[in-house]
Image (cartoon, rainbow, N blue to C red; front, side, top):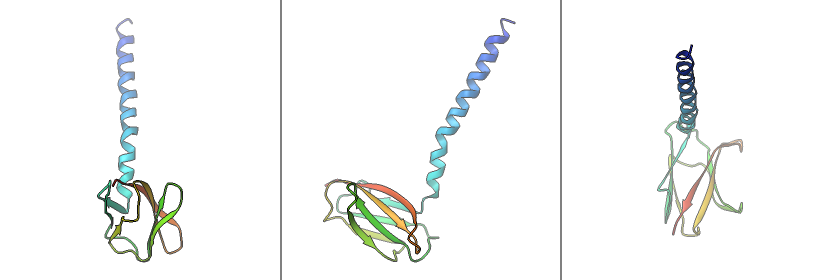
Length: 114
């Protein structure tokens, strides 16, 4: 009986650790569903929005600063859209990828460092 208790405790500990590691890897698999890839991030003079080849036509991109002020907007984006950042100050910006109906289908953030 004295030998069984440490063995059962060890098995329980291993089971708990394996569940914890599984839940930590879940967000990485969610990131594979993104439509937009940004580069370079952090950006200095421009940033490129690279959409997957299977994106639908009629999407638009809106960029906001952290105070909520719209800094940039473009309609009918192409597969690669480059934004000039000369009017942007140093900081973190939020982008919205919007479909034809006005629904936000993806959002994210990028950093400008000048």
